Image (cartoon, rainbow, N blue to C red; front, side):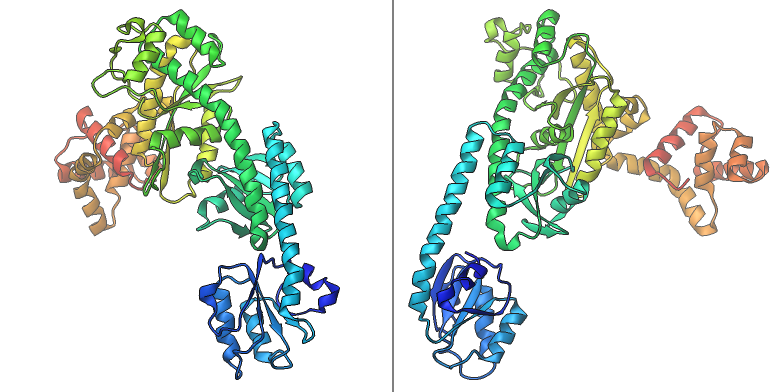
Length: 537
């Protein structure tokens, strides 16, 4: 019940002396204890006869105790003192606590008898609303219909957004800004600009949805919670269907990695919604979390959930298609592969032998290209990953294969996407395509970081030290010289120096390092060392 509704009861003759009349309260508590906090649970309208008041200054401690307990409002009776002390009004104004003057002729019992039935009616109304909303969901109402119903039932409007800023239902002026606010908010609900943000469900924020309600609902958070719960129910219903799709993809990928019959695999591919001649790409993803919460899914499951959201729930990601380190399928996967005719899985009961396939330790998804290119798919993933980068302590690592057709290409595509994801992990997150792995970058990514750093330091430390002492540019000259394929003139032109200056610097580099830049082997060593350290160019 709102304070404004209480003030509207004519026979009580109440008057608001401080605070917001829109504040809501859920119960009535009568007390004259100077420290009533231990008996308060929060959300109450506290009625007090002010018997604790003896001198100016007493009000501050009493009001502070109420605020600490989360009291919604204070009703002060005139009967004991004949007036409401000015210091009590000031204390309530300072604390933002609504203060209601209760006249002498109105007893607290009368006030409570009038209010409590109305509070019960509010509870019944809330339960009735909730039943109608849940019934609508049970009858198949989608999110659009749910939002229309809640606007009518609760008077709440807004939008549901993914963590990357996609508008799932409703309308929002700047969804990406709201998504970033959701990802970085220390706690929810949170008031951001003209919206109040509520989490939908209890999953990880990177794969979560956020309810952005129009206006400030922090004082009416129960409405936001109610709508968020209903959206969560609808999302859960959608998730049930997606679980079946994930299992189909998982079975298909396991069978493809076990090199099952091609005709059977193409039939399974069609079951997954992709024709044998239709182009698609493999996505491999993990989400690494620095401080995972108890009960959080692993990196592969989280990565799959995030990728599904980044691609608008147009695909599903399987996380069960993982071979054991010894090259064997797990028991459940062997049964799956056996049904698909996997070698060594007689009647579906044997254990299929197959070589370990890189990349199956992440979530694997098949993304139909539908007239788009893999470059466009990569940009879509990068745009979402850029928003998710606002979430502290997480690293999204995504690998993307080239364009593929037919079921026989899946195994190679999974390997390709897996290598790309490993390169993304070496870069501390991001989206890496297959074009990037067929270079020295993948080789560097497979070398432990401390080995790479030691290799680079051994080669480049003499040059870096020399540059620091003499304010010279030996390291920069070396990088440009190698980029110019050892051309003295091209290097001099880029550095805007005479060619003899370049010759002098290269000779000095050779003297300091003991290497010979006329040989390909030494040039390759320097090239790799520079790529790992990334010096200023």
